[in-house]
Length: 229
Image (cartoon, rainbow, N blue to C red; front, side, top):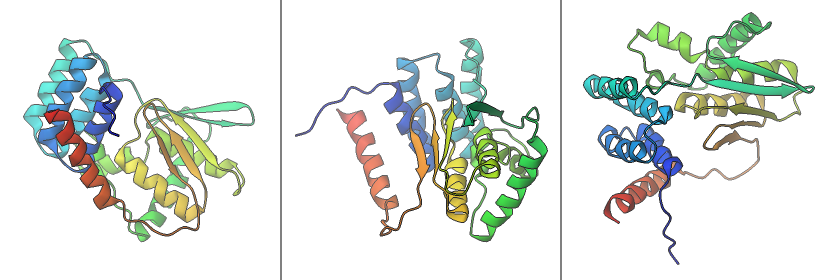
């Protein structure tokens, strides 16, 4: 029996994030209006929409939402990730060099990225909002907080130990793909918990299931339901 669920900010933001995956900038704008109506001071919604509009090269729309952020004095919360080891919590921020192993972590990630590219990994430049050249974007993507935390965990734990990371913001699409590749290469269970969901890849012997088409159908089904009910 169908159950009517009232959409809250988390549901709307999940749909907004999915618009990025399916490159639906126009629908993202409609959904963002609903998110902002529910929670007008939630910085993540503005940033999500800005990324989607930037990816679609709709720069005017992107700057309109950035302007709205400034007018409402909404500040973007910096992304941070944490990994606990031996009762000590290690904190990482994007491009952070304060950690004593920061240089080793950067080199480790550089080598890991090379391995991933050999297996077909491609950087998702759309996950970086800034209007900069590809080399700068690649450097930024290589220093996202969850990637730094995962690299540190891999460097300092035994192969049999699952890796669990906490993050204060939503995991971007590039990091989700990166986690999948690293999990496959290192044969490690990696789970990242952000404010809205779990992103995890666990090494199991199982039958491959094509979920992309099903996921896309479900996305448009939900969108249709939300805007026609």
